[in-house]
Length: 91
Image 1 (cartoon, rainbow, N blue to C red):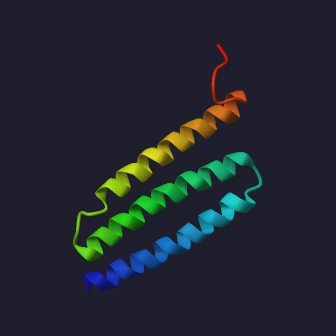
Image 2: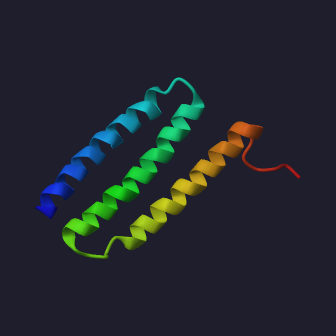
């Protein structure tokens, strides 16, 4: 029963990833694209977490941490770029 629920969750998360990818490609504004990519990163973390539950292992915990850190840094960098127009200060 639990495996069936996890399979349904993986299917729903896959559909959500597809929709976020479409929004990231076709988004009307840059803000929509950034929000979609950030959501895609969070969905990827959840996807790997559900896979860890299905396989009953902790082998992918480092992958989850790295993807989380990269998604956070990417979101901050893009927000800074949209605000100022440059990533690095020219001091």
